[in-house]
Image 1 (spheres, rainbow, N blue to C red):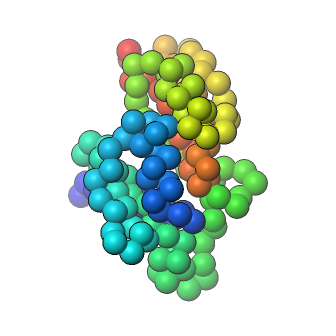
Image 2: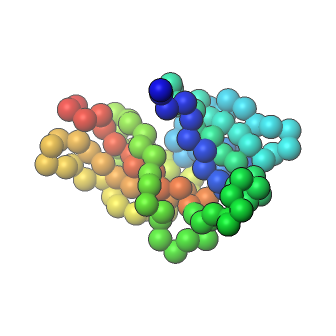
Length: 130
């Protein structure tokens, strides 16, 4: 088995795609004509967004909407970059909320955290061992 994609349920799929393009420099792979599903190019694993309505169709009890949760949900996506400070500043300029500024961890990795307008928690980091 391999991880093929991650789907995040959001209130506005086109807005989430546009934000990730502006904030992180990711490239749009696909947006369904309905506007309820889209994908970004991120390497071997696709980062996907689906409308809350699709999540509600899949789960009879509904799901937690990250965009309305006061705290970030208990998961994140990690984006590796050579310049965390620059990537962090770019994300904030695009409308992300700072959760933790860039810091160097004891193992040498530089890490920061931002929260996207749709509630997604993103770790911006250098590769482990760099």
